[in-house]
Length: 112
Image (cartoon, rainbow, N blue to C red; front, side):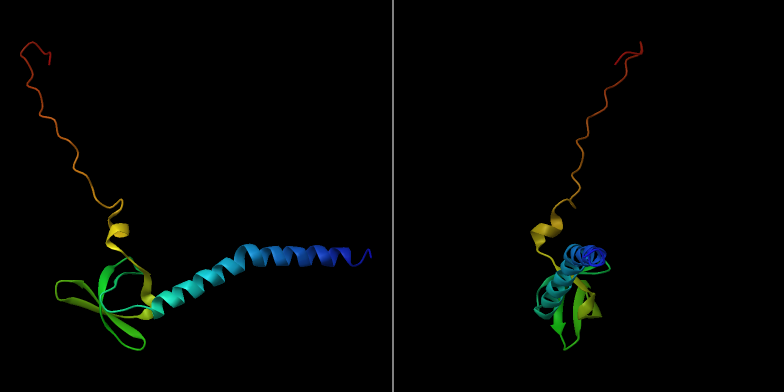
């Protein structure tokens, strides 16, 4: 029994490592693959490089993504990082204009 205990500890560490590290990564990879296969024309997407665009045409392995007026990129499906909804894209990206107070005129005696 004394020779089996170290192997059980190593086995337990390996199982814990698989549960904590490998399984979630496999799930993320599977979900991303499903997302990339389910894309359709008109979907707003973000490429893995951070470029936003709208899918305009689909091929077996490539997509044509419109990123600007008359600017279309041909990318592989693997370059799609996520589908973006307008609400999730705009959250936190709008810069509110700070309120600008009119400067007070300084009086000649140095007080404001």
